Length: 365
Image: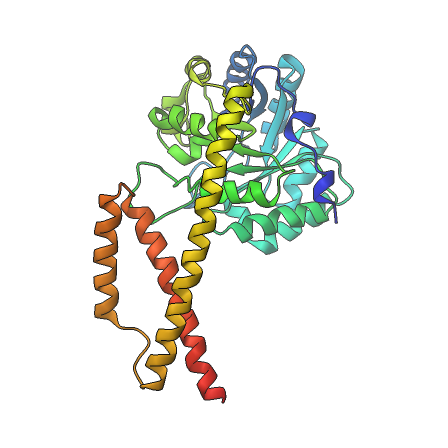
């Protein structure tokens, strides 16, 4: 298995002197003219170093445009030769890998619908053994970080060291302005667990609408993601796939010019104030841990008391009153409702778990 420490930082294999690494190109390679026209315009944008285009397109229903296949790889070769851009393509089957390598494709990526299936991932990993090629791994469609991690580990086990994770958002039932909810906490946790693996954000698939791209791209940079994957098409309104989320190269250039690149560190005065504020946060966190510990001790006392008096664990009316009162208090204190609901749910689930263990202990005795 490849060591996490041995994986390269994105800027070591995709260096950019113009801010974050930018990967761009059409959702789908449609014609040779469309591919070359788009690539030549993108090559004029300093930030763009990699041209992406799907030649095999997984579609929800049969009969829809499913990509041009192998001929598209020949077009990508022309992009390499005529623009100097590296080229990237999605692979879903071992045969795709074989063809991509045959045509000297620089970078492979594995899509969200493939990442969700460990069987498919293992087949791809087996096909990558002994191969030296960068691989980008998109997050699975559903918000399961373990599936994402598992996909990364399978590719690493194949001996691939130049790996990047691509955050493209998650399917979510709740109403959202986005095509795929960003759920930033998931890529942030991935960065915490695997700090050596760069995370590239794909605002196009998160947003689904070009008007939302700038905000998501800026947030990705503010969260220290190492690059952006933004779909661009010479004539996006007539694209055969996902026209609404693609922009022209000219529009992409404007978007990139509006991004603010922030410093990771400031001057000495700034760092001193930052450390002071962080110290206060640390103190409050310690107090929170103590308060939570004390709360769970009281929950245990309640559990023993209810058990010994043969009372059910869940008191639904009591819990409903707690939620209402705590939400009111929290909202009046300036906290967000969604955050409060999640926090109360986590605390309540842990309380139920602890009391359930107390009830079990009596049965075992």
